[in-house]
Amino acid sequence: MTEAPRPETGIRIPDDLSGITAEQYRASMRHYPSGVTIVTLNSPTGPVGFTATSFASLSLDPPLISFNIADTSSSLTALTAAQSVVIHFLGEHQRHLAQRFARTAAHRFSDPALWSALDTGEPVLHGTPLWLRTTVEQLIPIGDHTLVVGRVVKVHDDTEEEPPTAPLLYYKGRYYRPTPLADDVD
Ligand SMILES: Cc1cc2nc3c(=O)[nH]c(=O)nc-3n(C[C@H](O)[C@H](O)[C@H](O)COP(=O)(O)O)c2cc1C
Image (cartoon, rainbow, N blue to C red; front, top):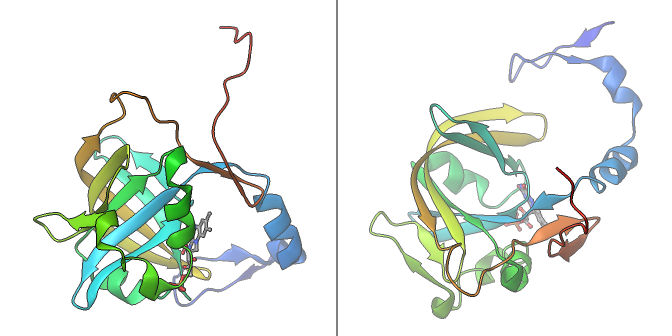
């Protein structure tokens, strides 16, 4: 197997993976369901944020998480300069925010009723069942994205509040709420 050099990252990607088309890649990824997050941060020009389903837990000790940001994202410059971000785990009642933060960047924070800033500057979206504040530990350019590794320094958890809020899910281009399977067996 030959490998194509990736001088910008030092990471080598086997060229037998280049046999699939972009359509095949996209179509297969649509079958992978995920939770929905919004990543927010403060910047010298104001609040920045975007919807992201690439969130993943990474390490318990130390407590690390990751997400990916596209090279084409209007949030990339601000993110690469940021010391910290807030990651919102959206509830099913927040689909409108998931859509808002994936559309026109200039409108994302235009309604002041939707958010307020922490003392540390990051915007927090009201009504979010759980959010994490993380420092930015590593930025790893890879392919057409940058992998962001964050260290969790604060957890804000309202998930025990009544009524309970179900998480927002994303699958095959649509938003869902979770439904437990009947007759769960141990
Ligand atoms: C459900 C969903 C998940 C997304 N996940 C990511 C993601 O993980 N990383 C990313 O860079 N963009 C992701 N996007 C796209 C961004 O939210 C945003 O639309 C895109 O970066 C374009 O924003 P811009 O106009 O500010 O560049 C996602 C969009 C949607 C609707």
